[in-house]
Structure formats: structure tokens, C-alpha cells
Amino acid sequence: MDPSLEFLISNIPPETAKILEVGCGDGANLRVISSIFPQVYCEGFDPMVQKQQINSNVALVNGTAPERLKHYSDKAFDFVFTRSVLMYIPSWKIKETLVEILRVGKHGLLIEQGGSKVSFSDRITIMRHTCRNLGNYQKYRCFHNFEALFKSLGIDAKISPLPFTLGDKFWDKYGVVILT
Ligand SMILES: C[S@@+](CC[C@H](N)C(=O)[O-])C[C@H]1O[C@@H](n2cnc3c(N)ncnc32)[C@H](O)[C@@H]1O
Image (cartoon, rainbow, N blue to C red; front, side):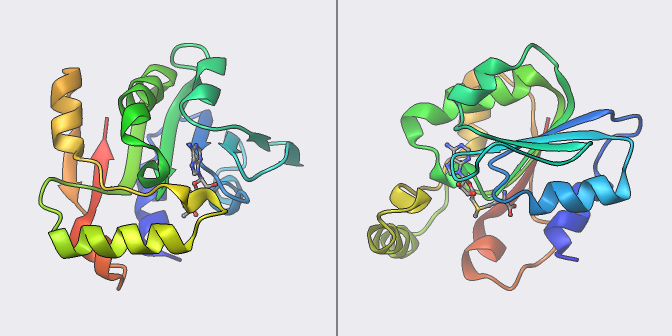
């Protein structure tokens, strides 16, 4: 299993009954999670997915952060997670997205790329990559400075480098796990 998914699963708090994945893609992560925790209700949303019920415990809906998150009530989920999604959220929507994730989940785990020390050449590489991928969700891609973002929001979050390697230049250099 991919080490980031393994890490994610190992961090699902005990007694979790409801999980939300923001930017779930085709639901691959939620399928694995629900096979391990069949008693847990899993929901995911993504702009690229059509509404579908995978099985009685896994539902996917079409939606985009932060807008879709407003649909859920406070602490509606025990655990909310993202993996490799927040880099596609523009800087003018990232604060709202983080606030909403924290509002709807009792616990959060974000596995993302970010930081304040992104080199100039890596920024250029990402910008070129972004330009080549116009037409799909990679219209926009950026490194958010999560330490500064959480500080400015006055939110306590544990932000650490990835405790595993993925063999990818950007992930291994800029990958972070954020626990809330
Ligand atoms: C690299 S894929 C990661 C998919 C999945 N999270 C995983 O771990 O395999 C990025 C996903 O983010 C979704 N995405 C992009 N912008 C989004 C947004 N504003 N809100 C929710 N999902 C978004 C894309 O459609 C895509 O499915």
C-alpha cells in the first residue's frame, strides 16, 4: 500500500463513525478505508466525480472546496482528510477551505505539499507544469505556506515533514502532514 495512505489509515482516530475526504478523485482511498473499517460511513467529494453510491457505506458527490464544505454542519464528521488536493486550491480560497475543514471535522489530517522555503526554480517548474496541464483540475497549482496560514488563523495544528518517502522530488522535499 502507498505509505501515505497507510499513514493516513493508521491515524484514523478510534471510535470514528463518519469520514469525509475532500478531493476524493474516483474514491480509491475511501474504498480501501471502507474495506478495513466496514462499519464506518465514508463520504467524498470532488469536482471530477459524479454522484454515486459505491456501496452502502461509501458515497461520492460532485463538489469543490471550499463551497461544498458549507453543505455540512459543524463537526458532522469524526475525521476529515485530504491528500494532494490543497495545491489545486487558489491562494484566495485556501484560508476559507482550511477553516471549513476544521469546522466540519472533529479531527483532520492533511497530506499536502507546502512550506515557506520553496526554491525559486521549483516554483518555476511547477508553473510550467501547470501551464502544460490547462484543461483539467491542474489549472492552478501552488505551494501554500501552511505554518503561516494556520498562525494567521489562530489555529493550533501540528505540521511536520512527511514521516515516509514517496520517491518523488516535490513530495520528498515539500511534503507535510498536518494534524488538527
Ligand atoms: C492528485 S488528485 C488526488 C486524489 C485523491 N485525494 C488521492 O489521494 O488519490 C487531486 C484531486 O483534487 C481534486 N480537486 C482539485 N481541486 C479541488 C477542489 N477545489 N476541491 C476538491 N477537490 C479538488 C481533483 O479533481 C483531483 O481529483
